[in-house]
Image 1 (cartoon, rainbow, N blue to C red):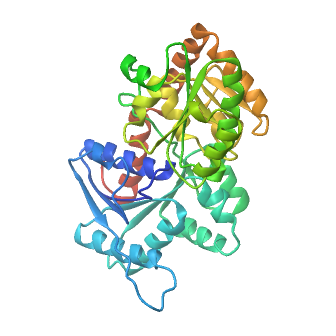
Image 2: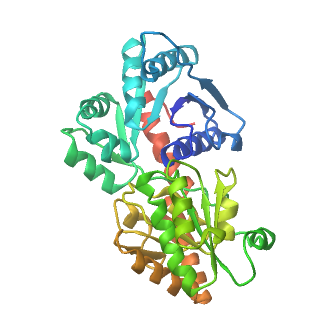
Image 3: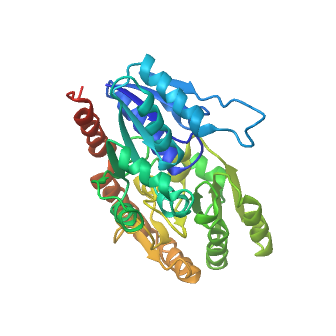
Length: 374
């Protein structure tokens, strides 16, 4: 099939899922066309059966802000028409699903649209009164709608007046790429012998509570020699640096920026921290689990669907001391930590392996396009 894949190209869960899904589909023989304002993060991992189409946004003196929604709609129409797409799969309701709706209205033939809801398009942006009607429109006018967790399916139904089916299709992980590695040289570069390595990966936005990550680490560091690896970038980076300095751990907190090979860092670490205020799924936690890391995180949103018993610890997001205590208990018993890590990898692959999830998207595409799966 010919599939248009639309997502944010930046460092974040929805964009990562869109890119990883497109690459998985390309490896399975489909032609995948990525459409965005910039080259998607992680797209370098796949070369065959993929194309990238850049959305250019015109500058016009009457536009106070760049009209990305309209430019994207025009580009979707262009690619769908000239590449004879069977389906457009848009990740995130705003603005992607709305742009897809406009493209569908302009398309001379039939253009099937699949919208995947990822979380903040429902739990944050979608609850803004001025934007909520657009979310309803996007959901109502899509040919199929999926959500990445049972929690998000329910949250969508609770907050928006939509009665149409919303299919649960979870995020997934490539178990060959995300796996334990035993890279002692990398570990030696990251910390001293005997030190525990704690890891956090995100887009450093307020919902991820980066300062809380630093505070949990500071409590752990008092009890066990440790280092904190922060992977990503975003608006909360300066405040996290200030908090680390105020707590006296700045020399043990390493800001590594955005990393292409985050799976290697995950495999070198001992524990993953994710004390988010809200998570619709927790893709970074799933990837860490596949690498054999126990996870200490908040019991919010869809995280309990991912971090199940025996694979880590879930606590009240405000109970930073409780999370720190759980982290210490895991880290000070290496045999237990390894057992939890092995259980985390098993849980990740038994429920969320790419080979289990990607065919579910293929089946949706085939149903809408009236074609068999290649």
